[in-house]
Image 1 (cartoon, helix red, strand yellow):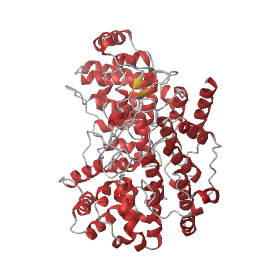
Image 2 (cartoon, helix red, strand yellow):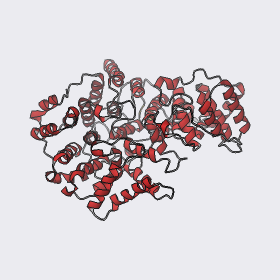
Image 3 (cartoon, helix red, strand yellow):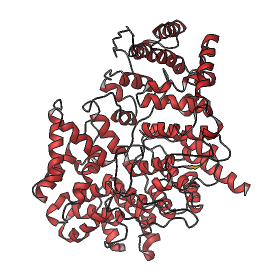
Image 4 (cartoon, rainbow, N blue to C red):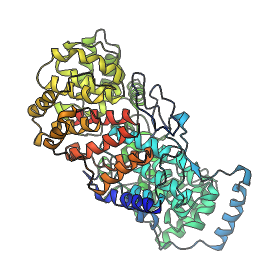
Length: 616
């Protein structure tokens, strides 16, 4: 038994490093009406209740003061080792405040099982991570580059990280939460990261969790969230952010004298300088009875850190668009949920949050509709709102399809590049319900594959199944891509999956290296939909070796064999790091899809496979 666990740890620890980083870069209902779930649950585990309709997702994440925005995990732990110790007076004051926050033993929550999502709420089963080493899983989480290629892989990983699961025996429960929350932050899920952190009582925080908690408060643009944690945080960590938090919290408590003294002390000691100091000073000025007025100028600032994002956003200081380009796209997803920003200011962030899976299509639709109704909306926002109204309530199917086409061709507010045929994939979840409500008709012509892709982006696989009857009325690229989407995305095979049909698709594929065709074969192989007599030949011709040889492949397939759905979900995200689908090896897609199917996560396996058919 010990040998098995040791082998699993070695495989998992190597997995995140062995996988190529492809491009570096509250909970919602995940299965809307029409999303057929015929997956079999692991026999010895409870089956989560199926979700019924999509609801708004969550978004947002963060970092420390003058440290880089998304440093590696070790940097988070050692953000400011040279931080001076607090004075005795400050320590005594912190001790007095801490006494007020102590919880009686009967009110404390256990660290043995942590997470807000129970199976009844759509979470995975309590034993989803099995007996794998927590330290090994933590190393994988720290080494994983997020956001992920796949929107659906991100949704699944979020579900796993938020699930109420057992804490592995070899890691402190608070540290286990910290690693999960830190990965959620890097995925753009700041609100959910903070929700997870709040599952731990403040008197059980560790140094690592305090560090990540500060990131979460900055990512959610809520510096007031520092204050309940401050009494104990200064005893656990020397990060400069917590010293600056003392000044901010003193100001919020109307103790402007103490706030000024702490700011002056920070300036003398060089704890914060330049834009970082001025943003802290401006945040202090937001407290009651403050007379500070600080002008923020971004000249000479070369990068955006979480400290800068969090305090600037909290005080409604506009951040130059160029600075967002120095950080990952997840930072824009944080922006989408910032409560202090107007709808207009949150527009670029909403585009990113939808594309990454932080926002559901329903949440994005509500946002765009509300924005279009505002008097301060610009022409682009008004046009977007009018197209959405036409897509959902146009006088005829033809008019609705026309509006959808114009919508998915619109340049998103964050300027992200288009995919095949000039379609912006991030637009598809917003019109998913509108596409699902259309009658299946060959009159859709070249728009057919993108209507199907829109349905599948929202999980409406049963609605998409109605379009199998129109394939014969299509031709060329429209017919081929529509067939590929239906071949991978439907609950059961309802289209021709003969070796000749599959081979014909690969032959007609004009992508570089026939990547789309080879990924189709890999996806069908992972879904176990290739004809048995030709399976080995088709996979070999696509360059897919079904024997897992690399550490990551061995780890995810071993986890699938142990029926550890949480571990498989995490490793699926590891296998889909990056932002460029063209750098996804077909063999990698094969193992992701195959492992998910084996552990009863077939809907996610199919949606990831169909997403590849839409984005390559």
